[in-house]
Image 1 (cartoon, helix red, strand yellow):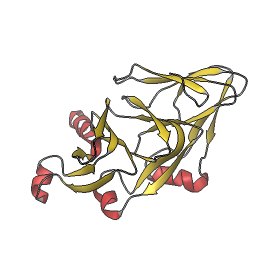
Image 2 (cartoon, one colour):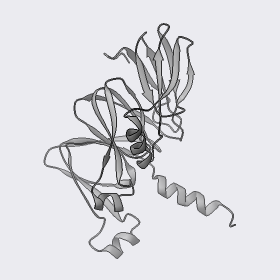
Image 3 (cartoon, rainbow, N blue to C red):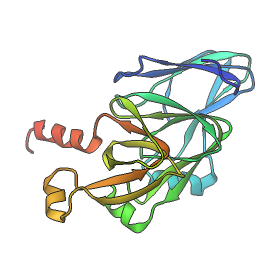
Length: 231
């Protein structure tokens, strides 16, 4: 797919557990990605670690359970192509940033073009304690292309104005900063919420576009734990 940011891109093996991102880059352009994302690249490209936002920015990413450094790939000696892949099984989705910031769940950032800034934002106390995402989330802002990754397939939920939708917090990938939402119990009572297996959910109020993932990291971790032999 052609873009206006000096690159063309294609999501390979989309809607599967083994997606990759192909980026064709013009000389002088660069992209940032999660650490260790590069699979292959032409010899015209260069890769290096970059501490975006300084030490405080790196520490903020650690607190949001991301890597301290980003990986930066730049087309130095001419046009070139690179293949990027996520660390865990899942899907990749592209978002064209038009100035509306997006929040990204922990582990959800994959790559972005130069005009997209990635920072860390602190959630309020209640959200941090009970959402399962911790006190910090990533915020993507600016203009350019943003690529997010998921555990399982990515599904887009378009919420029209005047409509509400309830989403399990463990299935969130990315959502626009300007959409209204509340954190609440899955059921009326705390005991019922906990025994339902859902506990806490987010109630979003449209309009807005929300990216969700088809699998739950925490549930998968518990399933794996059951299969491991006891110590």
